[in-house]
Image (cartoon, rainbow, N blue to C red; front, side, top):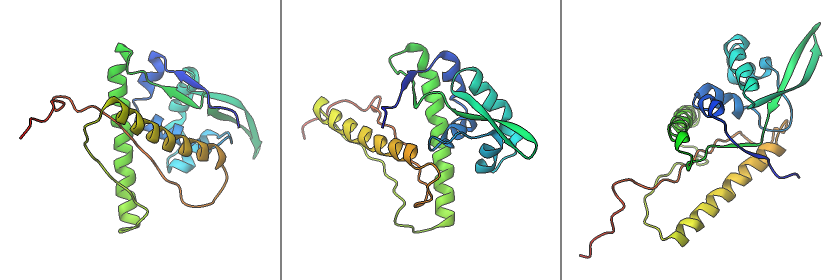
Length: 191
C-alpha cells in the first residue's frame, strides 16, 4: 500500500480547516471511493445546497480535487477526493498558531457532539473510551508517548483507507491532543 502523502497547509488551507463543517466534509472520505456533493450531504444529514460552497472552496484551494463525473438519472455530478492523505499544520510556523488553535477547537467541538450522540444512543456502551491525564515526562518518555499516539493514528488512517464501502463494525472517531501545560511546568518541590 502506498505511503500517505503529507502536505504542509497553505495560509488559505489553514483558514479553511478552522471550519467544523469543512473538517466534517473531509472526515466523510473514509476510503479511496470518490464522493459527490449529494453523497456527502446524505452522509452528513444535510442538503447538498448547504455544503456545495464549502466543497468548491476546498477544491479551489487544494484540499479536495475533482476526479471526474458520475452519470446517472440524466445528470452528471462531479466526484471529489481529498487532494492529499494528510495536511499538516506546522506549529513551528508562527503564522499557523491561530489556525491550529481554531482547527483543534473545531475538532474538539465535533468530538463533543460525537460523544453526546454516543451517550444518547448507547448509554453505558463499554466500547466508549474517554480519558484525560496529566503527566511529567522526560524527553525520552515524551517521545515514547508520541510514538504510541502516532501508531494509533496510523492504524486509524490505514483502516479509513481500507474500509471504504466495508460495513464491518461501527464507525469510530478519534480526537487527540498532546500539549504542554503552560504555567504548570515547574518541577514539584521536594516535600
